[in-house]
Image (cartoon, one colour):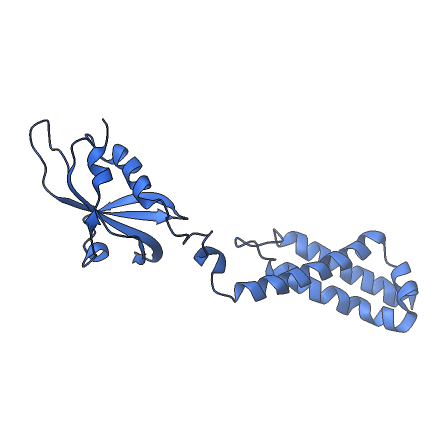
Length: 202
């Protein structure tokens, strides 16, 4: 039985080299890579004949400690990989949840007021300000909370530029960016007065 064990040990070494040569153990999503999952399945299969024929103690006693550790490590990787696959088949719960990418922007008015300082050269004296409540909408190929804003900013010290409309985009519950002329995003929204935007300091 010793030659068989030597063959199995050599096959395990090949599995270890294969895993090392195929790169990182996890892919870009954080899940175990295909190479790790494949090796986790192969390792127990390689050792099974020796375990059955000689018993667990005798079989593992002939396998170097490093390889024995590899077997247990790969088995653990398989379990984690299956758990990751199961989780991956669920909807994007973390992103869609209250604490994820789609978290509701509870303080959207304050965020818009703060962002307007950087957006406008002169944020003072704004007129006719109005805002819509944030709702989930498609922004290109992604989904984000969007609040539409109308206001009449200063063109210069004595003139106004006319009513302007922008879409405020939110990511993970906080302001991310303004989009100018958002016709598709702001068509038909219900506006409410936004007096806070008309009281901005210089």
